Image (cartoon, rainbow, N blue to C red; front, side, top):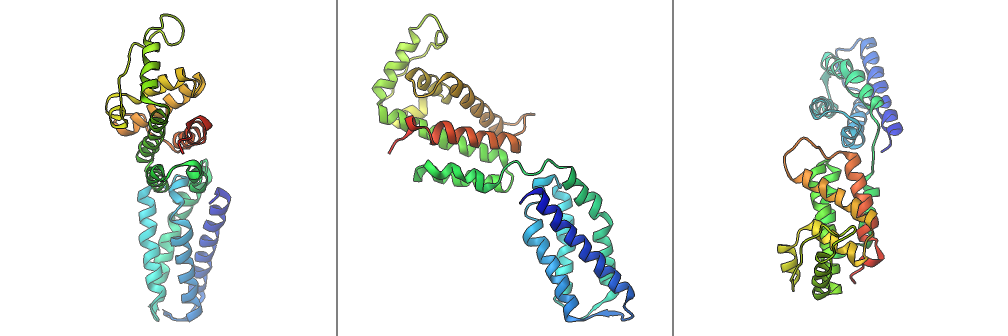
Length: 276
């Protein structure tokens, strides 16, 4: 949902509640029992739960505020299902909702940068993923949907490094070992500080003994990625490490969107990384 759309929806809720409040004030009855009124209350409560509550966190609304309005709109929905409710009960509840609605919801959404990504956009990463990779990526998307950005980052990197390891398996462990030995013997240039060589013969051995950062170096030397791609993928790995360990560097919506974009382009869509 766009920022423009949620502001329109919030205005509909606010205007409807104000109109209901005014109508109750003019009514001489002590009760609210008209079916049309109850249906209007029910519709506005459903709009909140179905269209607004699931997305307001994306626009900066705090969990505590979301929970507060969840409780108030729950009561509103429950009242709408009763044939007769005291008018003052409705009035008190609606006045309570409207009291903080502008400052706690509308102003916060107006000041927000809006959504950085949509799940539909992130889901494009599945286009060239294998069935095995899709298990990780689907869980990563689920975490992103609920704004568990650190968990999402860890899972997407797991899927990406799995693809890199499968590429090594496809091209041959002997060749991987050979490339690492060649790099170790280089004395000048970009690879002169790489001082490791590997002797792996299976996927499980590769996973257990070779660090993700070392795989990136070998892939660059092998010509499967260039120096710029290596640098960007290394940044993704750093974010993965930040996400997996306590620290003061949060994974933000912007970070996650960037990682999804880079890993899609440089790993899953990379013609040199096709394994089927």
